[in-house]
Image (cartoon, rainbow, N blue to C red; front, top):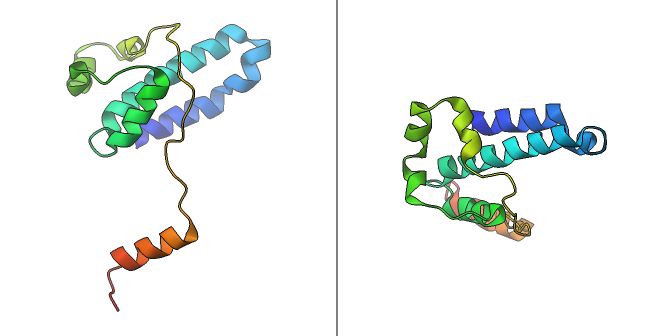
Length: 120
């Protein structure tokens, strides 16, 4: 989770949405870095949240490959900048889709009842 927090901080600090009109090259660089970091996060989250990773990979227009299985070890052998080679510049993105479904209050209550430690 620390990696995702660092990514979020980078995005909030860099504010590419503000730089788009002033420093278009900088905003493109920030977005490029973020897209590669997001791809890296899909590899980390995949064992725990496979549908999340699959949806993000779809949005990024990439497929999960056997290389994903050894990505962390592979990156450890290279320098940190190699993380920026996960998705190439100009890679098209698909239309975003919802990553999670919204839970209604009824759903929340049902899950609480089903998974609470205290059973009535």
